[in-house]
Length: 287
Length: 335
Picture 1 (cartoon, each protein chain N blue to C red):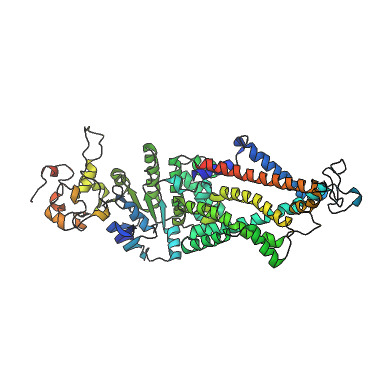
Picture 2 (cartoon, each protein chain N blue to C red):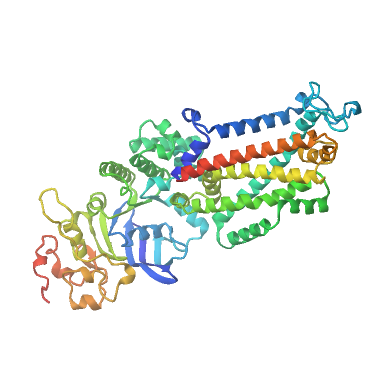
């Protein structure tokens, strides 16, 4: 209510408030921003062709020529990580986008319509909760083949209930508030109330929920890649790099697995921190 | 011409699956351009009556009787008719503007919403509401339109709500305690704006309040409710010298006066009854100093006495005695 207005002010602060912004949000946001920029600018900033094998340069350590070393076929790891960022981020981004869109529509529709429809949506979501995302993704791959599309679609469905459940309860709380009643006795149509009143009021929650889901989706998608069910080689993804680097760990060259692994962890932590802090701001407001 | 007809309206709400009576047989008409004040204690059913007019009731409410607006039954309207009726014919002003306006949207967005919804262009709608804001005494309008509800004071926000209600050019205003949530000086200001605008536009108004004085000052007629029943309907001008129901008299007697000092204000003995607690007799029975045997056994119907309508068996004999306190000395007149 009044807190939602304040929450908006908190999430998108006006200039005089900006200096009070949480440093964690700032740091995590900056890291994610840089990552996205790197992914977009990959063709221009990657020092080498990520797929060009140079057998003479195989398994090199950190050097001036190869900042993060090379893999057993002599491909530059930094370039592979930079290029890998594209699909490693695009995948979860698509998942979160689809899951959030689907989840928001379902949540607001069930909060608005209520009754049997609401019950039905809730039960279906409960059912989906029973399937771990990874299992769903593997079934999808088995049915539709390896690659980006099948796991992304499967994980989108798997993440929808996380969004739906949280938003539904917030939206139905909002729906019971007097201003919504005032809207419909004022003759405002149901569609307008849902899109212009309920949605903005649950938006802060939507933002935190999808941010946290992003980190989780990134790990799950990396796991799919790790299992070799995602994007196929030679295209680089972080998850698959962890997997291919495994064989050279025992040979004394842990760089590939380690670097890709660290990048995944740091990125996920950044997303989780961001989501967490955004959620924390909300709950502080709600007190 | 009769604009609104509340015809033997009754309302039950289930509490633990048991239907509970909230409103009992309320009949009331409102002419075009007329203001009627619906007065009563908390829980008397006055808000519910006004909400029934716009069909803003809990889904499990059971309604009896009928509500007729301009010849059409409101209770029988289908979805589309109801939406048109709500957006064009009536407008409601709520008690607490802060909770009835979406906090995350600007005042401007709130004001033009209903207009844009029915097809007006944004720019036109903005011009209309800007002019209305000016008439309800709001300054720096372009700035106000960009502000959020929490940046405005309660009184200002209530004037915004009034402007929003006027913007759709309704024929009937429903004002549900529009000034109760405001402090006293703001109350007077907001009420003055509402009154002036209503009169200028010739709108009918159903004004719900527990402030008899306030209702008398802005309305043409007063309808007094007690325990879900209508007990008296009279002209606002006669409220001070010709009330006919002991309850109305009690309400009048229990307010403080500026002209004289009393150590202790007279009170109506007992507590307000709820509609579902009533027995066979008169709803006011347990608190009435003039009760007779007939009051215990038969519920009085609303009937015409003089220029008013009143639901009291002894209206004729008590007439004229209630307001000057003489009747209090002789509880058993003609008993």
